[in-house]
Image 1 (spheres, rainbow over the protein chains, first blue to last red):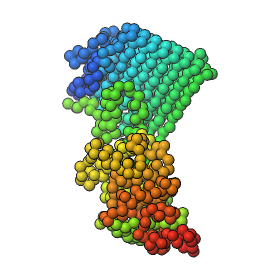
Image 2: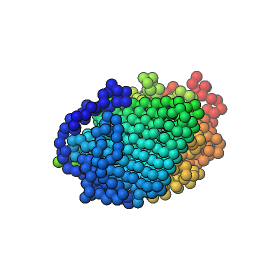
Image 3: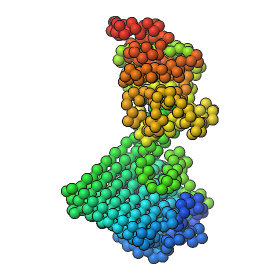
Image 4: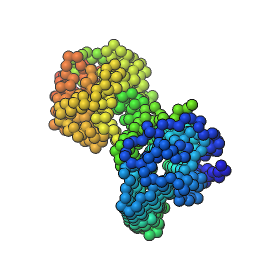
Length: 368
Length: 247
């Protein structure tokens, strides 16, 4: 595929390293055996979908109301535009809900795979979607979200790929009094770019996007979110925690735009970075662009190391240094994952974060 | 139990302890008193193994082991408890989680089986009750939002749960009102006043010693013990001040 990848000279991509993407894309599929996706379903009672290298795997899926076919999604986003064509669609009518949260497991075995998804919720409809990314290679996703008045969507995304790169592009229109919450956990070994443009187009809309990026080795993960308040009385929350060990780089760019007429907007943004080693890097870029005069936008951005006093206090009570560090790091990321609504999902995500903190790594597929 | 010989230690290259010698036997409570800057807290942190407190000479034997060769968590597992003058606040980590992990780390280090959640809660509840601390407080993040008195009370609950052989209590009485002082003093007696345990009480004032009767009182001045005696020495210091000794 001929890709016109963005350059680091572009402001929105200055912390990205996409230089390895073409090589990953040219590598063959099937470099590792596909993992058994069933171990990653959480038994939430809703539809289940498995995509292997971006291809729907009917044998291990139970899509119920989720359809597979051409997806009505277009974008000019440099990575997202590669992920068009056939994909999945969840479309719910007025006041409808799925039988339980939709679970999607994406398994990659090498090379590149691209897949679009579309979520369209009519007025008062409700859905929850849990996505898990496993394996190796370049996994590229475009997700279009359309929320009619008072529709509610909870998305929980965990990146557990062992190798390669995961790029996600979300584009959302959030209607009047509708609510979108997206929480992301990056606890794999692959690079990542989580990229979103969320538009609060209806009055009193709510949008939240946040999560935790855990990075080690030479890993680079980043989130770049643009959240636009286009109507009055909207509220938004962005709570991101970035942890970087070794020579890893974690970057967070979160932008809030408040349009001229979007009075009474209530925005909150909390970006915090934790350096576990002096050789690691955390980049934070909070941005506010406000054209209305009656708004409340709180923002905070801090980068630091673990508190030495706290570390010694824990050790003086008998906790070995590595465990003390893990305990404090877990506390650091906890509030970002607390926002996941379903208890089972939250517990699974916390367990993945714990596995990362305990140094076990996450099973992204065994090499053949 | 604890044998400190000619201990020299420095902080940021500045010598603070300058040849301190002290022996503590099982069943004894020792009080170390002294003016500000004498090296009282440095002694506590040096014995606890805090980074930045560098030993430049001397030796410390703890129950037959070289204390100075051990990591802070190993000192704890060997039975040493350090009570902090300023207990640290740890947002996001509950007391219960912290203490269970601490106790079980120590048990693993000693080759003992870890306690289950239920077993641990039973121990924790008994110790919290004994210190008049609500279990709800134990579920809250470590020391976050606790008053000065509650933090010191929490130190005693921790000491009760961990059940050490030797407690080094650094100005445990600072910031306490009279009632809290009595509760903390009773806690120290209840947990540590046994023939096989010992306490090193570091304090600036005599008043805690009304509740915890020391067997020996030492005066620390300019990094050395300049005088030792019985509990009457504490009263004398209270009357005469440290000035007379330093002179």
